[in-house]
Image (cartoon, rainbow, N blue to C red; front, top):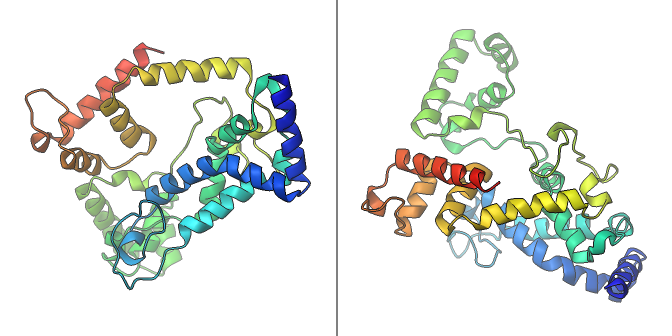
Length: 299
């Protein structure tokens, strides 16, 4: 085991020094991690792209017209993740502590909150996605939507957008109404993420290479390994449907109706005696609460 770790350390150092063969081996180690996260994040933040561009993922998302331009976000995300995970400074920090392989080290970084936040900062330049149905309300609705998300009051919104306060109040009312009708009122909330395996304040996590996140500086610590293993054991005691619902509603924060529609398309019933196409949103939320309670029982 010690000999294997020493070989991994040597490989990481050689790759950090730019040796072509070592770089190729490290890229191959990182490939499954990058491939997984590229497909997951691209689909999560695709929005309406799949309707207008041909997806390059495997399998591709959506079915754009055959003459549509190719969407390059998947390839660009792959390149960004490869650079973030295998840059020289990152590889030089690998120390093989507690028998952690180079794959373990990269896996921990790729599944950390700071990595996810860095990717989002790169992908969106800190921009907020404005749904098309908001833009269709009025020309200024998108700007008012962003202002509402940032907590601006009516006078500030009116001043910033060159509108009368009466107009802004009406726009705000229309935006809230449309979001409520579509069960997307949560889009007005600024998302706050908390890592399950870190006590750090989520607002203090790094977002630049110059400040490496603590997860990338050190390998697995015993206490963290025990907590992670406990979480994994509890998660494995849930059945596939419970895992799917919690992943969709709690982790990915997807709209409940979209999740329900997906379950119905797969003909998956949540309650005995109730057909999939007869399942309601209320029953989905009840199923989620039961799954969370079951997960909590095993922690």
